[in-house]
Image (cartoon, rainbow, N blue to C red; front, top):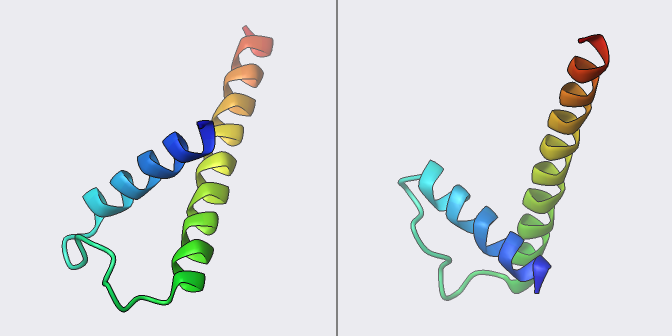
Length: 62
């Protein structure tokens, strides 16, 4: 369930950022949709990991 909520959040964030494509096209290639979703998940996880590392470094320096 965690993956699906994360996927939903990432999809919403992606849709909020792009005005030109509000919905997945009906004729979209499912493999490309999954690949793009996984790429977005990886980017989001990397961003969160980096934010945690920066926060830990700031706490260590204080």
